[in-house]
Amino acid sequence: MSQFCSQRCTLGIEFGSTRIKAVLIGPDQAPLAQGDFTWENRLENGVWTYPESEIWAGLQAAYAALAADVQARFGQKLTTVGCMGVSAMMHGYLPFDQNGELLVPFRTWRNTITGPAAEALTAAFGFNIPQRWSVAHLYQAMLNKEEHLPRLRFFTTLAGFVHWKLTGCKVLGVGDASGMFPIDSATGDYNRDYLARFNALAAARGYPVDLAALLPAVRSAGQPAGALTPEGARLLDPTGTLQPGVPLCPPEGDAGTGMAATDSVAPRTGNVSAGTSIFAMVVLERPLRRVYPEIDLVTTPDGAPVAMVHCNNCTSDLNAWVELLGQAAALGGARPNQGELFAKLFELSLQAAPDAGGLATVNYYSGEGVTHFDAGCPLLVRGPESALTLPNLMRAHIYSAMATLALGLEILHGEGVAMDTLTGHGGLFKTPGVAQRYLAAAAGAPVTVRQTAGEGGPYGMALLAAYALNKAPGETLADYLHARVFAGAPASTLPPQESDRAGFAAYLRRYRGALAAERAALQAENQG
Picture (cartoon, rainbow, N blue to C red):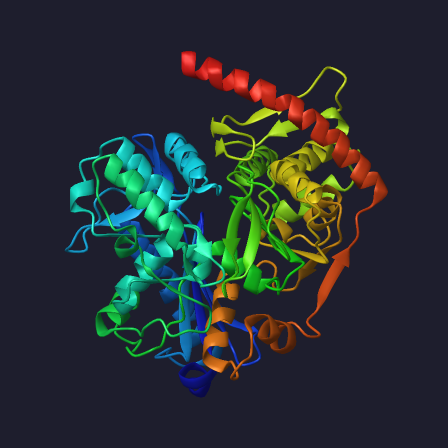
């Protein structure tokens, strides 16, 4: 194991919405060990955030669990790896002063508090700038005349922040950078024209800045991005067992790691990542004909243009209902394992009516850009003729987790965007053949799920580290993943079933109607 760790193993760490997870993979690209830490964002003073202290506590806990797993499996301490990388939820706002101190609490992707800024920047650039993008947060702070702005010297994403503290390097992978500010795929760097337009807008607001100097430097997959410093090693592993000097690949966002984990970085490939949020990424052959506020334009980890349908809400409401049903089971003396309960309930949904029996659930815990909501209020909507059964309820909730995504994918279908493959990964796909089958119906395309689907982002980050460590001269990321990682890898593909397609279409019509009830509920809640 020591040889694997020092020369051939790679480590991926990802800060997800509900878990910080570390995955170690070997030279055959298969996972060897893992560790995780559970955390949860919180709404404080109207802002979705995570405490800075929990970032470091969670990082250390996830790494310690992984190191303990290595010790248990292989009988050796983890002292080094060949390469490692950090990824995290994209977007958001982490601004710092000249001393590296965080100026305001971390503002996550989940916030929908930058509407005026996003609208103004989209108009100025002729390029969609969603509310969660980092530059929208910065410009909204300018519109709000926030007091921290005169002290601002640098801002970045969560992955960029952690990477900086581990290496001392203020860099960002191009995929993650593309969720801060638009990237010019021809140069692989920030769009210079848009930088100049932003500087002019900021100056007009009384904040003359050189935006390029405030942003992290952009790196493409496979490029050097620094090494673990003594301080970084101690931050990651306070026991002192992990040694400094480990090279790091460019830090990435969860969209980029999802593409890597599903072999979806070549044109006409796509993937759907489903957890607390859900998003689809489709690598484009040509630019879209017009600007859509529902569609983000980002990049692969090596800079190719990607259309992204990002939905803030996916499994939070589903998880809450499963927890409630577990409490009900406990009243009868049953105490099922949480994972077993999810699997049983997902499998039970296959017995439901294809349209979920007339039920509709709106799973919005927070605002939703695709359907233009600034806040959320989970709802279950049914009529007296609806069949409220447990199978129907479960299918409705799983449908709901992907319904808003389906509305966004309709736009790409209308643009004629081709998808030869669509691969699902993330927690929603852990139960074989259920969410995969429903997504095929929702997307109108075959959906592939690999054995590593549940590993998700941290596995993808470990693969990006492996690419940086092992790539041959001239070997592209797409070639590396397709030939060296996924060739012959076990996978299952399900085409859409006609009954499911018709059932999901009927459900989606009800879902659109239920959004009117969602708006009314939010209005009543605000008035109350």
